[in-house]
Amino acid sequence: MSKNVKIALIPGDGIGKEVIPEGVLVLEAAASKHGLKLEWTEFDWSCETYLETGRMMPEDGIDLLRPFDEYVNLRPVRLFEGVPCPLANKKPGDIDFYVVRENVEGEYSASGGIQYEGTEHEIVTQQSIFTRRGTDRILKYAFELAQSRDAKHL
Image (cartoon, rainbow, N blue to C red; front, side, top):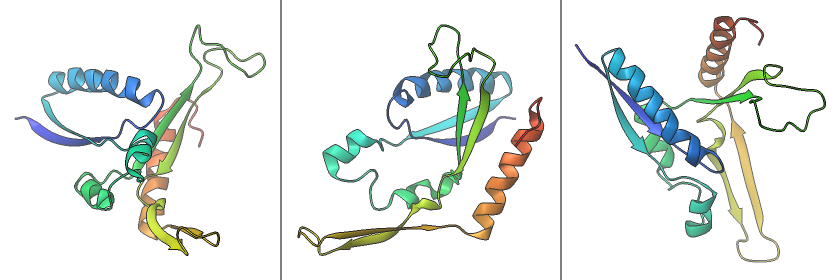
C-alpha cells in the first residue's frame, strides 16, 4: 500500500533555487523505492517576490502552510571538495553540522506592524513569539537528529 506524503517547497533565494529541484529528484527516487507517493506544493516566497510585491509571502502564507506543519527549518552546513573555504586550514569533512530552526514561530509569527507609514516618523515593530509546544517540538527534533549522527553532538 502506498502512503501519500505532502511536502511544501520554499526554494527561497541564492542556491535554494538550484538545490531544491535536485533534492526533489533524490526524494522521488527514495520514495518510489519505499512505496511512498510525494505530493509537492511549491511556494514562490523569496527576496525576488518581495521586490515584486512588497511581501515575502502573501498575508495568508502561514495559513497556506498549516496543512504541512512545516515547523523545521533544517540547514545542513558542510565543506565540499573543490569549493574554496574562507576558514583557515579547514577541508571537506572538518565541518559537517545542521542548523535547526523553528519555522513557524519567532520571526515567522507575523506579529508586529507599521505606525506613521510613509512619514519621516515611520516605525516598524516585529515581535518574536515562541510557544512551549513550538519550542519543545523543535528541541525534540534537534536532539533526535543529533542522536542519529555519529558524533551525537547538539
